[in-house]
Length: 122
Image 1 (cartoon, rainbow, N blue to C red):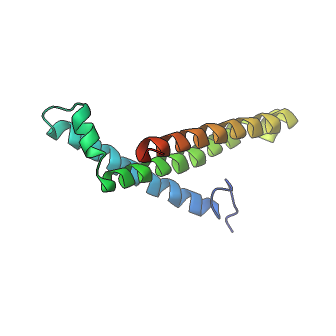
Image 2 (image 1 turned 45 degrees about the horizontal axis):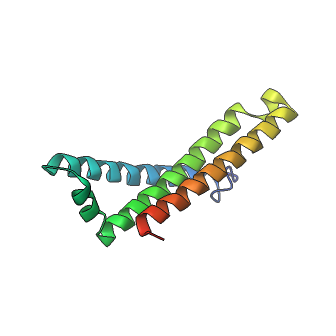
């Protein structure tokens, strides 16, 4: 039985699937932006403003932002857990890992709120 790993999802398998799905969304978003840049003769403020004035683009950007948050949380949690384990550093490892995860959560939450504010103009 696979147990909960990151507390982000129900199980390690769920986290694995969430990370793969988020990677596909991020790849699609990146390919779209690269295509837009390559196919638009002159890319300036007016072109970017027009592109992001469409509801579908803001929704796509929000989906990419949330995918990046999920992908980062799962990936960084795995790295922190692997390298800052109790076995490696004893009690200091647990305190260091939890502190790093708390800092990571605050940074991710800050960037998420900031990104939503930029996209939707709250």
